[in-house]
Length: 272
Image (spheres, helix red, strand yellow):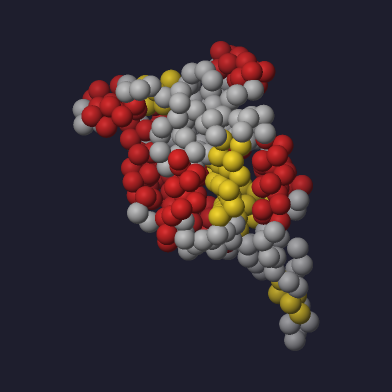
């Protein structure tokens, strides 16, 4: 029997884990929404595991998770942070997703203030496979965090070798992010579900240009939440409480299946 209890599929960011999502999963669970936070291919081990993983692998893994949830729940929401937002967008497009979609700092453009001025040159390096496979993009301060206390804690976790996030990303993996971005650019109008976009004005990885582009080109209604006191990791930075509150309101505003009594006396859909 398909449950009327809604579910939410949460997708972490590049090189990350469920830590990227902060308390979103716990907050939704407390609101009686079943949450799933799978690990993307190439993640959860070592950075070298990302070599040979393509953007299609990320999309298909989440697409399979989505279909499995859809088989058990009438309502399945999607949410993603950073790369997870791009993956969620493509899954929403391919599955004609009509429940809620939440995007946290989706990088439609890699143009944040902390990126090196020569970031554009990566497209030249991509053409030299051996060099691109050897090059690493390290995680460096500010780590997408404006809050100094949290930033220091993250620095300490990196120094201890905690596996909450990769210390670097192979450049070839960034190429796959670029390919996914290009895949989406001309197809955004095909995504017609209600969408929440949360983006910081001072995002150090992807400027608000990304959010504005999505607001302009997505095919469905968009709820935009700009942030004035955060960087890229909006789920764990200064305004995390406000983001969680807005997210909960967004997901809870979705219509829920009503209890339907059949002639044979059994309930097809339990009330949420």
